[in-house]
Length: 336
Length: 168
Picture 1 (cartoon, rainbow over the protein chains, first blue to last red):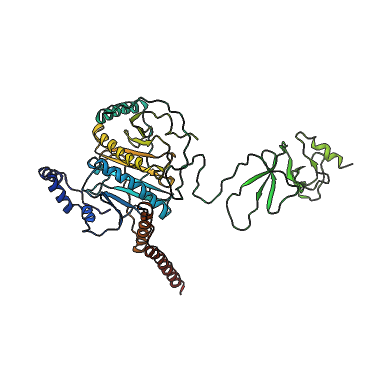
Picture 2 (tube, chains in turn brown, green):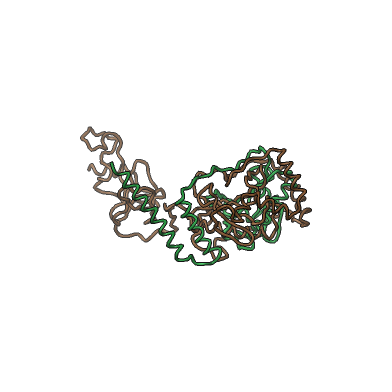
């Protein structure tokens, strides 16, 4: 946006007095000479026009907040929102929606910030009313459009609401109903009008549209029918629920979580000091885990208390039952 | 997931057949209004054209009311349209914020500088999209070719640059 010097208070006052004496036509003619954006609209200053009709003009900002930053302005010289007539504002609203869609479709951005500044304290830099349409991407570094979320005392909030409601009712000559609980409506995911694909990522609803290529872990409602044999390329394991699950084994440097899928529901209860694994016939097996140096397979003095065998090398692996027999008995039987 | 703005709107300050406005309970500043559609739309692009027009006009009217009701010295209107723009609630919301000199807010940005090529490509892309979406025209063949040529030019120049940088 072209930079303009900030006038002093005296200058502002002098200017306002001068304006007050002019007729509407004189005022319009004055601004068409003075206002940079009126000069742009009239073609006296070069610009990059994106859209134009009888009421408004959209140009690319030469000093953008982000690439593709569009300025949409009324062709008539209007400084602030309250001066904009209803029909012009409605027109600009429709064009804003369309231009935002253009940004999403053509620039492949993930959203748009639509911004209006009315008045100097609000950050208005140009003396011509305009709507900013800024293409946005996740983590693009543009923090100026982040909204603070502050706490407010409920009593103060209620009081403000009441005052404002009364003011607006009176000003617009309308009646505003008291707060009533609304029934929850079904979340509408499909747009009503014809919408070109694709839509930008939206905050998560019932079916979120994630912008990243990583898949989320699916939650299968029912397990698949168990296969008789293990498939290659998958790692089969006993999951937290005591069922057989598998995950695809990834080669190379490919990172990221792979989706897990349940293969068979068994529902075993894990016991301490046992290693649970899936055998070649897709059955859950377990074997006692050895503690201490003996688990390394070296020839050491045996103690009566600790089991000898390594995990996975049991000559008689047992099939899992929900409440199995004591493990020491199984080990004792091997010594006979 | 139930939508926060679809049910139980409290602290309403404006209402008509299609729109409702209320005070935010986590305001940027006191008096921060949220204007939204009664019908559930997630982003602006989903809102029917007529309603989009009314939305902006109503926002403008409420903005004027803030000047008078709260003695605001300025107002900002902000739509966070899409997750990339910081949208958190999946229901389109127009934020109308009263401003005063030296308040705690600052919506100003640092302008970015684009090179001529990048600016030119964006211009063509947006113009084509605008012709198609806003005006319902197909992009003229010459313009489509121009975009392709621009892209090729940039690609070629990048290749040349990479060759040059590889030279000892």
